[in-house]
Amino acid sequence: MRVLRGLTALAVATTALGVAATPAAAQDDPGWVSAWLGDVTVGGPGAPGRTMPLTLTSTGATQPRVTVDLTGLAGVATATFPDFCVTEGTSVTCPMPSTAVDDSGTLTGTVPVVLRAAPGAVDGATGTLDYTALGEQTEAYAQQATITVRSGPDPLDLVDEYVSGVAVGDTRPVPVAVVNAGDQAAVDLRLTMRFPVGLAPTSYRNCRYGTDQVLATVVVCTVRGTFAPGQRHELRGGFATAVGPATLGSKRITQFVEPLASAGPLPSGVKLKSRDADQALRLRAVGAPLGEIPVEVSGAGGQTYLREVQGAFDIVAQGAAVTGAVGDTVQVTVGIRNEGPGVPDGTNSGDTVGAFYFTAPTGVTVLANPLGCAPTGGGEDGEAATHTWYCDGRGAVLPAGTGNTVTFDLRIDSLGGAAGEVQPYGRYPRVDDNPGNDIAPVTVS
Image 1 (cartoon, one colour):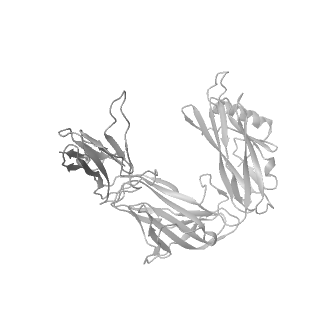
Image 2: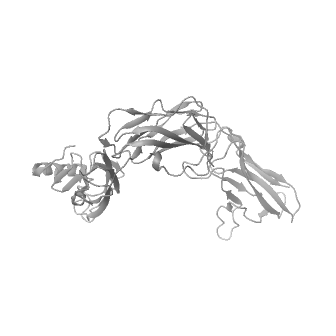
Image 3: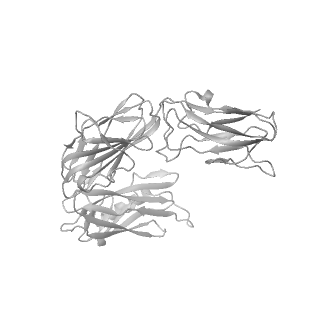
């Protein structure tokens, strides 16, 4: 990268500030500007540079910019900035980038900063990078990021892929790619991947497979080899993954890479077993070593996100019919059932699935709220409370052939009233293939 210097360049940059700024704010409202750069760990001398995002955000400010003081990095690290920034000694000024995105009057842009260990920097050395966000007449907002030098291997995951148009029956080549951002070679890696319910990854003889509590397939592979600093390695052809009939909605396939010698504990609650396979998973070197790690590479974890797989499924409401006399207490068991083959999966959002509404028949009183159920609101001006209860889902997935049912105790106050009903809460992840059975009656006679 080229760093501009001198008064002429400063004048050019000052002009650019006005171009990138939002419309001039009223004198009594100068707007605001903020910036953010997190703490950073870089490899020792000789490691590839780490490109980190210095995010600049502004609303209503004139000439939003960030100034960076490099004094605290002396002897620890160096920082290189894009050519639209202006350097004056140990101070760097960067205007809002021309690529900033305007979202309803709020500008957000990213200044990529390449950080490297300084020559002679030792393992564990720390320095500071001080930065201040400001605009014309706005209050300056000073912050500080800590830069740490750490010698050793540092494998990072390079995969961040979003895929549309995936259908049940497809086989996807899920990419696997890593790079060593450290200053020392990594000898042997552990690769851990998680494939949500419905996805079936291929078998490798150097991997072990298990199923977690939400029916995802967890794969842990021991990948042999020497992974040099800056060298990109990939799985040729990708990790073949079949999209099975249980696949429904969006799926996030995660992967995590770490040096085998210092790998953390294995995934808890998963029994891992080897499979018979003709092939081993190998990561092969691709291209020349990288001098700089791209800004989008942020850590040891990566993902492949499959958007909205339109799998087939049918959620069936389960009603009830009971008999009794006035004054009796009767029980009704109501809920929903997944007839499959698709499996609603809330692991992306962290929500439970399988929730439903139960509306009690007219003329009965619900004597207690079953576990996980609660009335939805209440009446106004002395009116009776609602007769509808919300019952929560039982977990993050609702496997085919299973359901969620709850038993309610009802006191019969009168007979001959309107029937109640049960129906799913929402239609997750979409209206199913047979909506005609989504509502079922609940009767007391």
